[in-house]
Image (cartoon, rainbow, N blue to C red; front, side, top):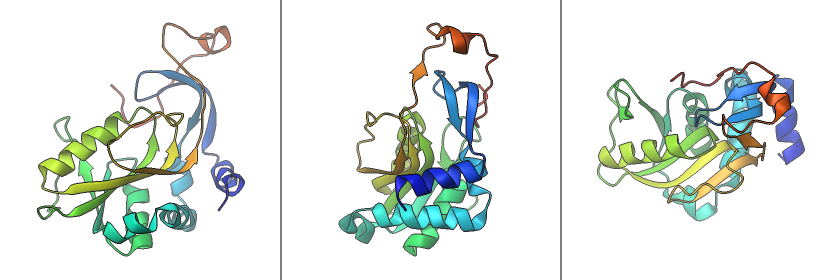
Length: 193
């Protein structure tokens, strides 16, 4: 899939939203990708994951023993990446505010993990998830995401492969352009705090 094909999938799912959005980082944007919508069609999710898996460097693909993704946004794409790569997939949760493996999920010492997210903006969730995998005994060898919104600036300490890179302008809450300041803000993502 090329970039136009990928964007067509997001548009077909009505997953590219316009308005005034509060991102999980606290910053603001006039555009938001609701990846849950693009992933609600299992066939579309499978196509996107297969395309993302194909973008992974061959040497990285050969190392991956398991896929781990942070709940909630990464669960579906993580599962589909596990299918595309032929490995098991599990997810991290935040029952007490910090990521951890639950539900009987376990990593063996040194098990090589591909972290999979839906969207990476600042990398905060990814770094927290990587830390949780290390604590559980795994070794993150790379990260893949449907969308990189960092403008190519994110450093996760491991190779990072996005399916799509989008550079929507983001703003600090106290430095909004007038056209954005005039629109009520909404927080569409999974972090409500």
